Image (cartoon, rainbow, N blue to C red):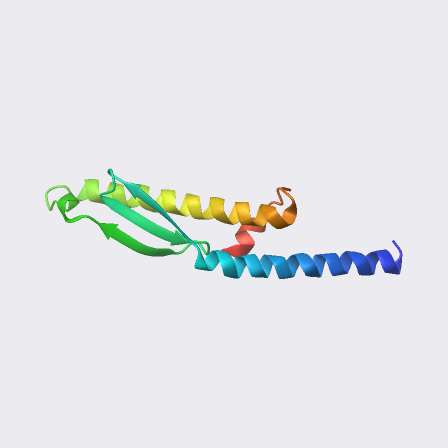
Length: 109
């Protein structure tokens, strides 16, 4: 590989890293929501795979059935995180041209 080709390759890699950093910042600001139990529990997550809010409707809180509430929170949380990962993957595909680069989504989290 010639020096010029190597230099061009390094410039492309640096540009991609800058784009990854930009997307990382953008997706941290974006949120997705998921709910369970017909909207009784709603969880919001961001592109950094952080849960930013949990909303629980009062009528789903039953001291005699805590397990159901726990299951709803778990289901909504897992779906919110799945949607956040999907959002990040979609954003990343814009700079990778749709190439699936293993582990690239993990860079953002």
